[in-house]
Amino acid sequence: MSGSTRNTRNTRQREVILDVIDAAQGPLPVGRIHERARREVPSLGIATVYRTLKLLLAQERIVAVELPGEETHYEPAGRGHHHHFRCLDCEVWFELTTCLVPHLDGTTLREGFTIEGHYLALYGRCSACAASSITAR
Image (cartoon, rainbow, N blue to C red; front, side, top):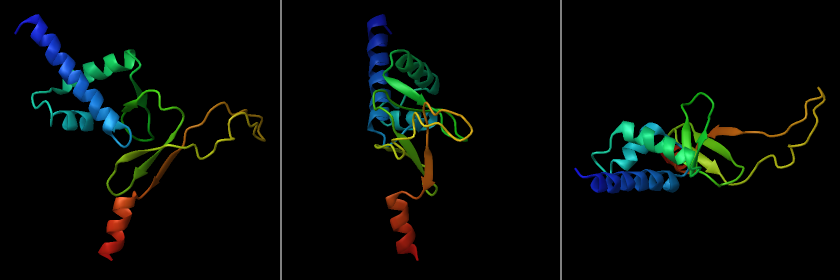
């Protein structure tokens, strides 16, 4: 394989991985990124996904999201401050587009702590799982 073909292939793989992350409803773990990207590039290896994520992080095109009790997930950069919701049935993380505690930063707590930032992860049932739960009754 020539160098130009290899670079084209890597660029295609990179584009597919970035498209998968961009299209997701919320942050994705490496395994899901790999699974979804292989629909477009069946030969895509997990090592390539890790290398690509490292590159996309360095380019600040994606961000790593640390979620309670989970491996690192990834989502597009530039989406601003937001929180996440995890469905307990389908186990998907969703991005919430608004801050649920917009006036918390800058608050001084009774103990003397001044809040400079916050992260909130919510758990429950997404609309699809909640609807199927109701129809199953």
